[in-house]
Length: 278
Length: 306
Picture 1 (spheres, rainbow over the protein chains, first blue to last red):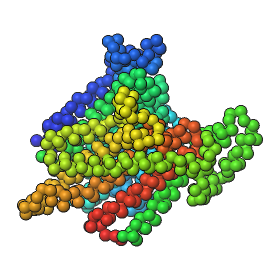
Picture 2 (cartoon, rainbow over the protein chains, first blue to last red):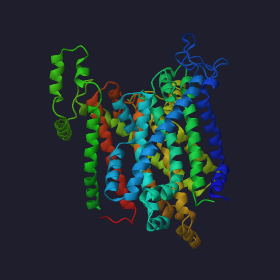
Picture 3 (cartoon, one colour):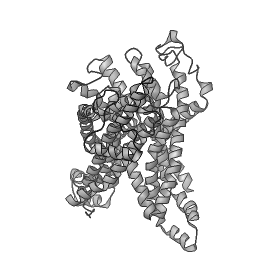
Picture 4 (spheres, rainbow over the protein chains, first blue to last red):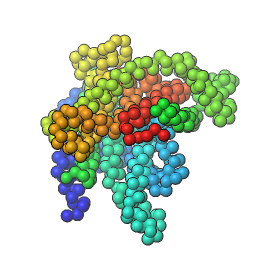
């Protein structure tokens, strides 16, 4: 049985991971087909019917401007998922390039890189993201950038330690002896073997990215109204907590479930890719 | 040990300096003129000019930075654009609140997280384990502002047992603390469990068991000690999570700490405040990390002080 098949079977046996996959697929479907799935226009205001509790007309009620909460949540899935994937994707690319160079070449490059990472890490991650948005100004793209930048150090460290370890292994030494170029060694030998921790990390990081972006949205520093970003929806609904808590409850639940599904999958992947567990 | 501690502190000074330079530079890159903001859009250009001179905004950038550093050493963080009061004063008013909240949350999180993690690891895949780890998983996935708001809704709005916002009594601390604890404990619990499981698999544990040592002695005498090292790393990382979470929690509960000061400052474009608070956070976080490193060295006998 191939290694990949083994990993797949191990993953499948993990019930939480499977549940997570199903949940995540639902979110992805919501994100892609939001226009068709949402019963109402997420931006359509109806002030006469605002803050309405859940009913047959509006399954999750309406928000402070009379917009359908369910539709906004479905469209919010698109925003959050996009946010997560793009910020993590950017962090991955930059982090891996920097970390790989530091880990493979070592020496001064390594020292300098690690110093830079230490400096960035002297700020707590959330604070770093807040700072970047404070400079660049609020907005969805800036939030994406901020979250992405705050994730780079983690990838750099991970890739660097993986490369430091793999670099010393026999097959790399052998390749060097045969006269393989650095590029060939890195891309053909080391990188393919460092993919598994990166996959696990990335899945978990998308979860973190969604949470961080939602936090920025909640603080008013991320997606701006009228965009139906989950965190921003919570922030606006908060004022009406006394009279209409459904505006805060449901977007929050959406965040919890989507992040939970990603965490379940990430945990499942980690366990499936772990060579020590049966 | 002391020499190592001093060396460690010395090593972080250049990092802190560069970090402060970053904070300084970042705010200078913001579009918009702080003097114009302060004086108002239609202010007399001469007034704006005098404000610029007063704040040293006319000087070249390196000079501004050095002035900034000198001021920081003297404890002068400038004056708040919004209130006109010294930034150090504004911070000193609120820092105790943040420290109190963070201390409570951190101690209880560590205690609870370690306890749950250890108990779970000693009964792997049991009901206790599965239930706690499931809750921990949900806890890690829930945004801190949402749990805060939900707690606020249940206990303050619906039941009226606890105050929703502000400070003043012990009761005011309860909801923010619980929110923060719910934010950091799950991470610690999960990590402790995984580290403990790793350790309990080791040969020396098997040896101890075959020697006839009681489970309790094994767990507390051998396993916990060895699992402590990676757990300390995670505790260190969760300090960062705690600080970030406290900024948001303070916003949710209108708790007058430096986190709320920071957010208010960002919206008011109050750069001196933003700078001051960010520096305080960075310094505190750096000190906490040094503490973690020193605990490491103390706990792990394999590491030699250089």
